[in-house]
Image (cartoon, rainbow over all chains, first blue to last red; front, top):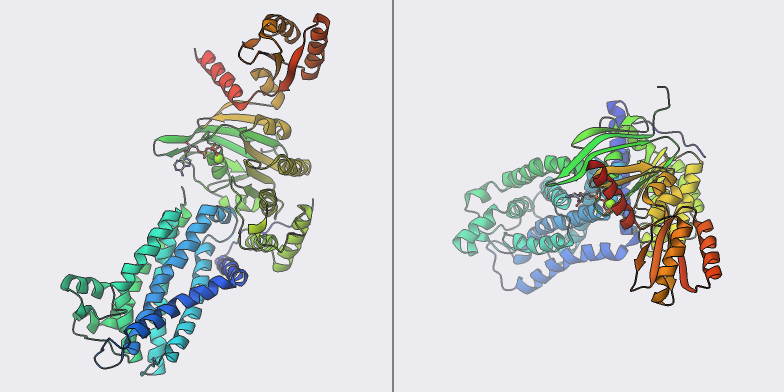
Length: 275
Length: 319
Ligand SMILES: Nc1ncnc2c1ncn2[C@@H]1O[C@H](COP(=O)(O)OP(=O)(O)OP(=O)(O)O)[C@@H](O)[C@H]1O
Ligand SMILES: [Mg+2]
């Protein structure tokens, strides 16, 4: 028998941290290898949000009058935030597919860092989000969207978008570990649409009937969209409510709360998977 | 007692799911370097036992040690020493076979070079070199199983768990897996194998535990168990049902056991101990008597028959 010398479980905290990062990176690389093997899927993933942006831009661009600017300027930040929320679907699908196929069990039977599956997922999805945002910004610039604030403000806006994606990541991981059936994937795919539309991504909450407007205001997606409009110097459409006064604060608080809830829940769930 | 520690040792494992007791006081001892068969019908608790022993599941109570380490308290140590092939092939469908092996090698904390070398070595050993760069999606069921097995052997584990490794494979692919298991056993790997087929356990295992409703109901070498359950059976089908009486008499004499008669199928059968001797003797006796048989067949008892026998034994003992 060829003997491979048996690696030892990491002992010191430093070693554990090193392995956690190395194992996480291995899992991220797996996702990159998936993309390399399925370039068509990556292109579809990119085209979808860009298409939504172009479609709404051309459909409503002429008809919608936005106080203090044009509709494209209002729309692009909204669709950027919307895309971050729709990312929950990608995370969910990846996690639940692995769990259903037994890959998660195999990972758990290996001496790898217990955090690697989620850290790796995190790396892959955040990289994906950066690529998506880049493509969308290019498409946005092409249809006439501009930012008017400082570079620092623009960077802060992208930071808020990625923060929202991170929150959706943890939500997606948790849901993916809890609901494993293919029907659940369908349900989620349908459910993200009302969340997307009951927001200020496409129209101002003020134009909606009272209670609907309130729901819309409180949608985390609206908080981020409102905040980045402010940071980009894009028109925000009627900013008289209490929430929209503190848009940036809300855009930090909402994801922070989601992460604080779903990160520990996911880790617990992963550790005790089918315990 | 100074005998070496067994490779697998379970004491009173219990695991409940709501109202069902998946494991209900499960005990097991597997000496190092042997192949042990865990034989049981659907829902007997085989997968649950394997999941606990391979650190995927925490038992409600009871203890288990694998490769010298406690599966709950020292699970990291256990994980470096075991390989697991689950009931369903758990490999990445999108990646190639080689990419799978390298990835899992990395996750076993081999260096990149070592992981790549190991991947090529295993691809070669499992005759997957040609398909090594194709996505697993394009593999046949047998190839997938072989890759699955290869992944579990990356670190040359001292204990290997195989959960129904041949279910759903055609006879050729099944034989390949069997050969591989025999090869591993020959190099000293301890193998715990679950199966629903008596024949598979008989072919591969040094010892068998029969499990039902989360508990071991019988244990022993294949020969011991076969003796307890009446070994093989011989079935004789006659041309004309009027011959059934004479056929039964002859069979009873040859087998030295009670026969059962199935009039609709014109068949008599009886358990036999020495299969080949019984068969030759029976054919000779039929020729001497001038009795013609339409069909004579030797067969292993089915798992159903084994369970009926074993559970009846249990009841008799309890009564
Ligand atoms: N996650 C679970 N939730 C609820 N019940 C479960 C779960 N896993 C197993 N069970 C139940 O525990 C019992 C034992 O299941 P187990 O999977 O160990 O059986 P098995 O011997 O592997 O069966 P099979 O031959 O079908 O694979 C069954 O009654 C099963 O329904
Ligand atoms: Mg099973």
